Length: 135
Image 1 (cartoon, rainbow, N blue to C red):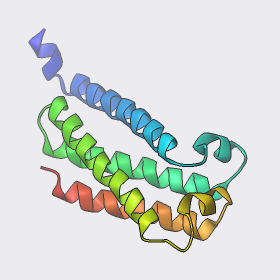
Image 2: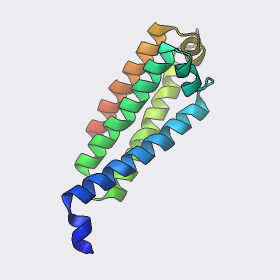
Image 3: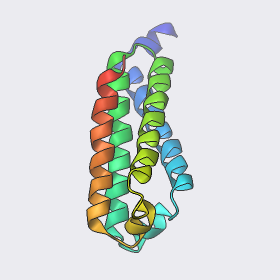
Image 4: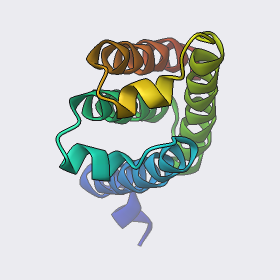
């Protein structure tokens, strides 16, 4: 059975499955911390929410890309991926804090595309910074 887990196809499928599961869990956490319902707003055609959510998806996936690349075991990849996600989540709160003149979530819910775009780019940019520091 040990040869089964050493097969590159099995390992790839396992890492992919874990990354998808973590992506779902981490998006659910983002859903809890935002004041709007991501998927409901996207269904209504709110492009700003789609951009912000897409940035979060890309950010989480990028963090896991680096985590998988730099770690030998799935457990190490999950640990570093979760740590990277916590940093990304912290970046979300810092972004909200640094814009005291308006509320990011309210602007995104109102389909302010400039704010949605900046939110997306912050998630993507932070993911590359976080990913570069993962060991």
